[in-house]
Amino acid sequence: MFESRDFLDLETLCRELEASESSVRRDLDILEQEKVLRRVYGGALFLQPPANRAFDYAEETGRLSDEKGRIGKLTAGLIEDGQTVILDGGSTVAAVARELAAKSLHIVTNSLPIAESLESLRNIELTLTGGYLDPRLRVMLGPFCEQMLSGIRADAVIMGIGSISETGFSNNNTLVVGSEQKMIEIAGKVIIVADRTKYGRGGMFPVAPLNAADIVVSDSELAPECQELLRSNGVDVLLA
Image 1 (tube, rainbow, N blue to C red):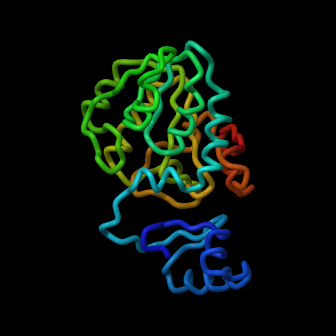
Image 2: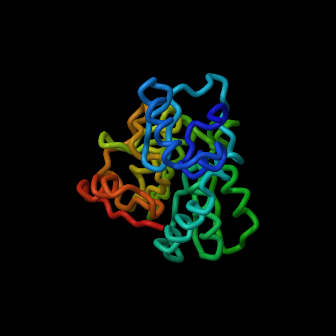
């Protein structure tokens, strides 16, 4: 079941295994002791993903799509007409972009899916960063991307993130980290969008400390201890 997915929520596990919640929880406890997976809030994280597993943008978009839709709608409400907004890559930010389509904005993005969704709108001024195109993530990265970002200022950045833990925001791709750090540097307000599965799992490369974010928008099932961790670092937490 984990062959193509590194996280599964409890509801999906019960449904696909046709087992009760208590039975699934017992099995997860055993697998965690065997270091096959790690229990996280709402489900389980597989600790040994296949080495040849490629990121699939369409698959990621379908994961927790309802939650991402709600996050997108709530986040879009934080943005005002006339602002310059940077949109990072990722499926949750893409959900925000769909909700921003009715506003009058200047959007800067390194994401091809986001650019494709906005390119025909006359109310949106669209700027692409350029850079190396990662075919798996469908984002532009690297020195050219960072150089372009260095020459602008933005009212806000809306950013997805690989991982959130007590050590800060992190990711597992060094090129992604470089572009995200530059986005944070040039934005007046930093808005992180992340569903509940991104919490409690540290990435390989640090992006920024928790207090670098002004607002984190997550789904309504985010654990209270995760909310408190963010708020104790001066971050406003909004739940969709």
